[in-house]
Image 1 (cartoon, rainbow, N blue to C red):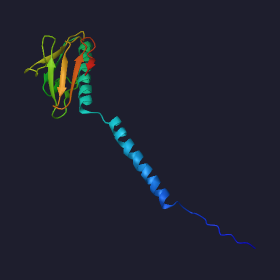
Image 2: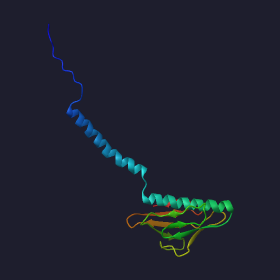
Image 3: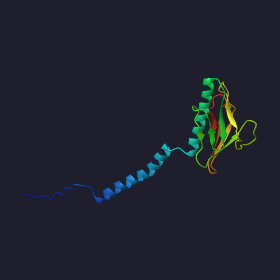
Image 4: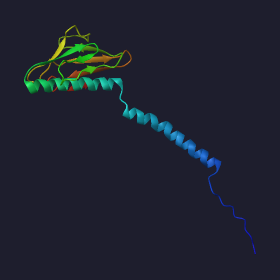
Length: 152
């Protein structure tokens, strides 16, 4: 009768466990920044979206009623006293500058300056410069559709 000594392994070795933990840590280190970057949008993207939403709503309101609608320009964003037109407030620290067709360069909005959408939904083709000192974005709007033509 021969007896053999069989060793039964009921688990993993310490080396295997450490290797698995190391691989998981590497994968998390790579994927977490990619995932959070994909779901979070920057301040400039949020501000651009808010400006586009305000312009689109002002145009739609003008078309619906056949009456001119105005949006006030301030250095903090676009403001409307009409409920159906959302305000476009810039994030803290951001400033708005405007350039009309007759302007040579961007400037701060003047007191009581507005952006008008006539009863046919046509507006003056404005460009806006949004900046916080470190980052800036230029938005140019189409006078017929109130959509952003260029986002630089």
